Length: 187
Image (cartoon, rainbow, N blue to C red):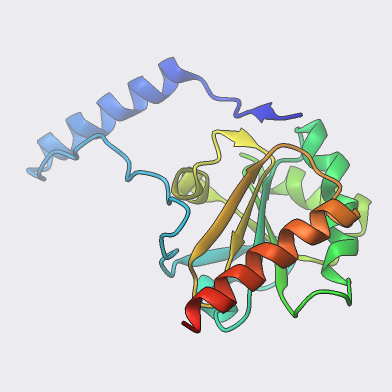
């Protein structure tokens, strides 16, 4: 199951036109109007700031050196909410090589996301996606989206939809993805 991003295309179009007009009035060069293409499997995820939601803000580079699982979610997305507890359990799983699990909320209202995290007693580091920067960068047009990133920052896999992340099949998928990249890097 997946959730589509709630957005008002007309409002976004008007906002883009207003920004273009303001840039023109200020003598700034016009923006291309195009957002960079989402990261692809095999590409390195470049460093960028992560704005803290239930803890401090960090740089993505702080997670380099060990595999990382990024879950993109929203409090209004039923499948996102349903898989959150399995991500919590996954983060504490002992049978896989060490890795980190973080969440990035695409909620427009950070207070709503924080309220959900408090109700759910979340322990994972969670971040808020202002202005859809991470959503666009990761290609999260539908959520939940879970991105597996190796220790070098390379995207190993992108998995759309709700999953039971501590189920045996998911553990095997994660183990294979991280081991395959590690053994491929040593050649």
